[in-house]
Image (cartoon, rainbow, N blue to C red; front, side, top):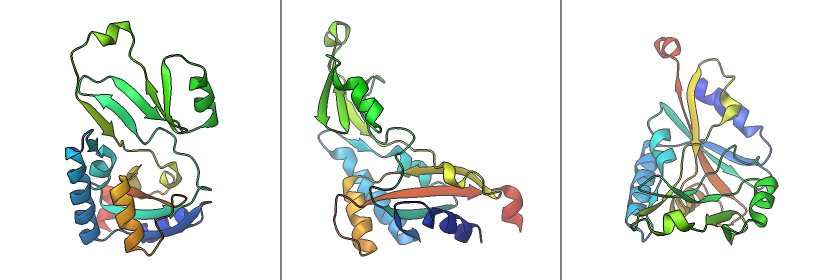
Length: 190
């Protein structure tokens, strides 16, 4: 019943095309796909997916551009020393904020790279990683029995896998996210 209630809430959100419960087989396939990205030239570490898959339940949401923007960036470029080198821009205000800054370079309209300053140029070469963090999914916060809600974006390869699995075209205007949540201890007993 908990999963069905979560699906009903998500299905009603603007821009949602489909919501499905992720099977164990698909969970394993996604984890394998994402772990393979750690060997890329600039490794992709999907911390959000790792966290999402530790929950009791996980849903696949297929969405279009009408779906709301995420509350925080879903892609960060960081170093092993903890410095942020770049990030996804999620709002027009953020894009405007960086538009005229001399220390910012737009890799794409939605991603900005920060140019090194004098203090960071002398730092020894640091390893760089793309991090896909977990992202809040507030739409399920009011479900009484649901706790520890997180969402995440799969990498481009994971997104492609999910679109194929659920019969959606490889259209850049359609994207997938995963929503993971657990249920309260009291509800597990019922």
